[in-house]
Image 1: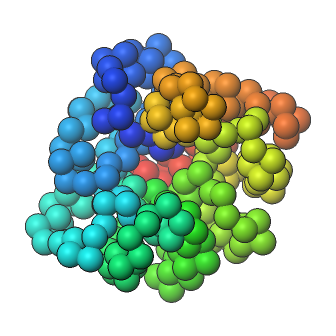
Image 2 (image 1 turned 90 degrees about the horizontal axis):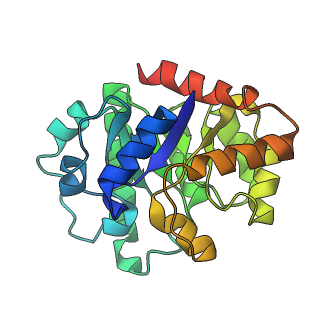
Length: 237
């Protein structure tokens, strides 16, 4: 079983090619969205699970949460949501980021849906809010924060995605070694993520390189690395 736990389908220059990759690999993809229009653009496909969210980069001091309840009810999971106190340069939006994130966490609890969460520069705040709302088994997307918080996230049953910087980042290597296989997931984060890392755009089949690298680093089999994906899919049913 191959699962891409975080991908932005609207970022691909050719959605048709991306879908063809899914089919060749028989890969289930968690397609995250950044806004209502982004969510509406996700195609219906048997290998795609649809996530609805408002990305923290899209949050402004006036971001409205009106009329989004139907999308929360419709989606397979909630995401991409979260906090970003690092790359998001408009600090005046940080209070609204917190309000929007808490709204989605409350909705996740209400509708019993898993969240796909962005944490950059706000890892402590995200952890505290997950603890406050007693949310377990959430997906932590491309974590690059303090490693001393990882144990607390793991105690909440969180899954950690390993992304395209595998093999390019010492911190990510350390993270890989900290995460038990049953809480490991893999992601490509769309074509621009690898381009940000090494200047080369990627396609969904990049997931194979990531998995092979992690298997080598952890001295385990690819089959052992499927456990987290199986557990995630059970929760998404």
